[in-house]
Amino acid sequence: MTKNKTIMIALDAAEPTLIEKWMEEGKLPELKKLKELGVYGRVNEEDQKFIELPWLSFYNGTNQGGHGGYHYFKWISEKMKYEEISTKNTRMSPFWYEFNDQELKTITVGIPFTPKDKNLNGIEISSLEPYDRLEQINYFPKTIKKKLDNILGKSDNIEDISANLSKNELLKIKNLTLAHNKKIKILSTYLIENEEWDLFMLVVSGPHRGGHRLWGKPADLSKSFNNEQGNQGESLLEIYQAGDKLIGEVLSKVSEEANIIICSLHGMGSNQDRSAVLPEMINRIVFPDIEKEQKLENYSFIVNLIRKISRPDLRDKIKNRVPLFIRRWISLYLLTNNKNWQSTPVFVITGDYYAAIQINLLGREKHGIVSAGEEYENWIKKIKLGLSTFKDGVTGEFLVAEILEREELGLKGEYEDRLPDLIINWNNAPASQHKTIRSDIYGEIEWPTPGKNPDGRSGNHRNQGFFIGVGKGFKPGSEIKGIQIIDFAPTIINLLDQETPNFMDGKIISNE
Image (tube, rainbow, N blue to C red; front, side, top):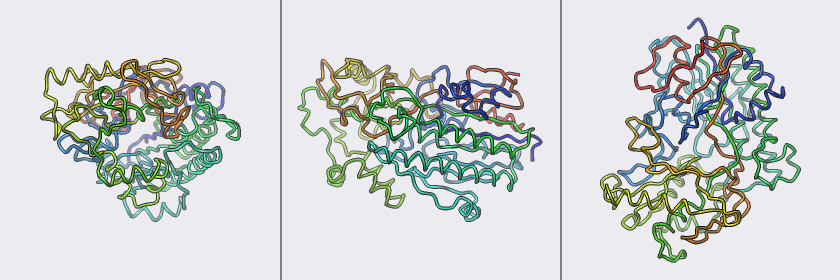
């Protein structure tokens, strides 16, 4: 056991502008007190591009070039299909698995996307989120499951479906999120008081899922909430305050000498995602002379059947009621699309906050047709130019803020060549404002749900998070600049007096 324990509590995807505003107004008293006792800073304040799967960057201490993860379904070029991220195709090396002091004990609660094969001295409860359709709670060691299930009790799932929800459905999500928060508090305080640990890490998921569904909604959900144009988070205040209260109650069980980190790795804002129309935008650019009604993709009978018999929200409801392995199979099968690869020089890759484009490159993709060199570069230029012509059909505002080639990301590492060829950064305007999308060159595209977000999410991720540090290396009442997600692992390792692995790229966060 180490002399000074370290505890980290992450308010997942908590938006720093809201955190700062509500601390200043005294609405988040526990966070405000901790900020005054330690150091405060923005995470990714320099606005690093392509912040996808931030938890992999967190626990690996490397960026996407070093670990290769950018979505939980990853495009595998040599197989021409998607696979779930795993240790076979992605670096997944949580730093608490590799302490040089094998006696150190770690407890983690709710950290997502950890390896299925566990190798740690302690307890790990991953994917502790009742709304995730493609994950399930995973206990290590398995012998602790029964004990903790008795403490948690039965949870009602938050059914996350691709649809715009009613006021009552949104209120249910809010109430279930708050109820889940209370259970996490009970579980965490039990583990802190009854199990041995040197490092305790907890992820509070409320700000994440609440942000996706409640961003831009009024605090009183009984009022009208059709307008999702603003960057307001009033409806999230109760969820943030529940997280603030949880922090105070959990830390009351911890020694005053413990090192404390409170954070979010990324934030939340209005949903800017235009991925719903991106495939058609690409089709218009690649096949400008083909009538838009003509089928450009050669779907199999099964895919056509699934797509025809149900809307996305109904597919989600069906998937939520079948075993986990079937849910994953359906998702992967639908993503593959069974394209006619011999006539597909460019295609869209599944992303999260960012959209991604891949060139069907000969020698890299299993069914590649585009030659390296001039032909590849011509397609890159054509796609970048073409996408830059699309704008909102009413306001005339362009959809794309920036298109970056892989080399421009500066994400160096052994997996750099596994990242997409092009990354699209959408403009800041909410996507829900669209009725039509228009290009003077490629024509008009109807927005799938005029005036609304196709997936029903009013909020989506932002690059910046926040950091509060109290203890070793953190000067009380100060601010610090330049924090990146990859800095968390070296910092926590240093707080525990351990050696930082050579493969990590991050630095130690400190201002003393």
